[in-house]
Image (cartoon, rainbow, N blue to C red; front, side, top):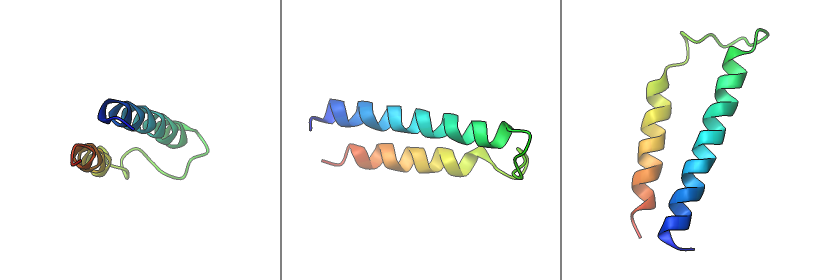
Length: 56
């Protein structure tokens, strides 16, 4: 798989994951509140995974 395709699939995967996570948090029956779940761990995870994607 070429680097460009790998990057594209990684971006798509994380966008879908974040959308799913947002749906879970914002649902009225959710036990997770927006205050308890910070965006920083997710952003750090995203940065680490994108960074490792360039290490060919």
